[in-house]
Length: 395
Image 1 (cartoon, rainbow, N blue to C red):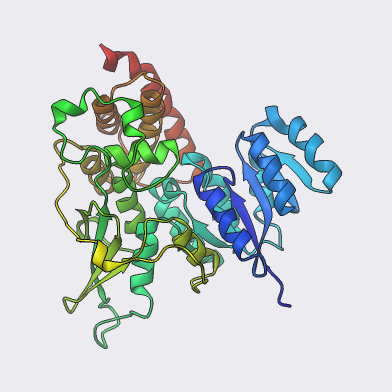
Image 2: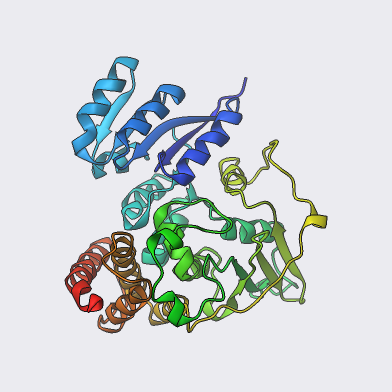
């Protein structure tokens, strides 16, 4: 019997993490969850560890360390806590693939640690590339770390590019000409800016097609998610922002498309099921059989439209941030994370999120060059100023 591929799941109790464990459960002869990491969901982490028996678990929030250690140490499972522990476990020699599904900026440090160990990264934390795309791609090349995207759109682009190189013998001419990044439009597609002023968190959390965590669902409703994905695609596929076009496709069956230099277009289609891109990444780009529902073309008609940037200015702000370059996307991401948390807590209106993000982006001079220390300082400063500014936006 061949040795099973060892997987470290960062964010095992979240939406992506739990679906990844479903994939591992159904392919237990090929895959093994050897490391599980959660932020604070101790009860679910304990249940997962009891089923999958990883070599180690990390509970990032130290307040829950005692509870998790008491439950799992008798089973022979190593229990660790804190950010440094996460960065250590992803470098362990037995780990082959690191699934980075931690939400937000917190996923940056562990991803960099895994890259420096030369691991294959199944990347689901888009903020990592938004905040530090140039650094991530440079280090991944330096350390020979492979990055396989897990987001459905980036997985689709990745799959469309398999087997493609150049259109002719000139090495400098790539096959890829344009990326068509599809968006569902979220729950408020077609709403006017005025109607969006009164949106509640409960309304925004009801995505029409996908089941996701709260943060990414709100980002989808505001189209910030598509802006972050555009920045991620810019780095993953070394493509200029002006060559990445966002297209609203409400059915969420075409997950993205690539236009090539001869005018041909490839699209990757499938059911709106995150287990598909997860299994493609965990299988190291080899397809793994399953019994999930299949797509019936007779049941679907596909439509496309342009995004409404007046109603959803976050997408335009993302394009502005990547054009500014340097630490500007870090500013965008930090302000957005504060804005989304405040919206979910009822402390900030839906449209006010965009106003806060725009003000932070326009009031911060981006540094052209950066390292991890610089990013950390920018992130902390923008979060502090965003929190201080919140009362102003509720007047």
